[in-house]
Image (cartoon, rainbow, N blue to C red; front, top):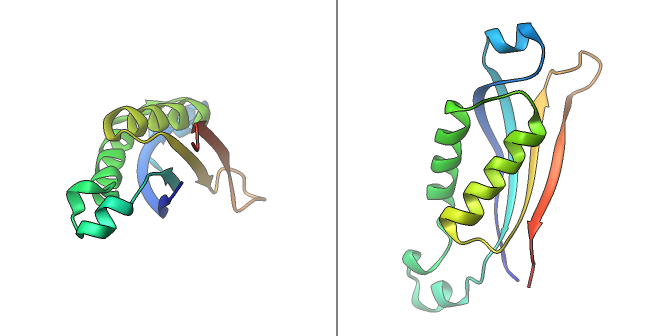
Length: 118
């Protein structure tokens, strides 16, 4: 299976369980790998036959900006479901990180993998 990826997507949102986290938007970082067969698009040089990473990124950013989840786990699950449902992605690996969540770590977060790589 081919993989289309987006790395270092930065989006501001309300995320966290602490009261102070609910008051201000925080940046989350997304790394995304999506399984998709790109052979037809490559042969025809036709973007309509491939997974449009710009469209996926813009939709994901819109969703995350409007969200207000408590847990990074919930946000990651909802993002994965959105991508799989709306863009027909059979497999994905999504890394979601909160930089500066702990003053003694660069970032914390979660990596989830959903679907079948074929």
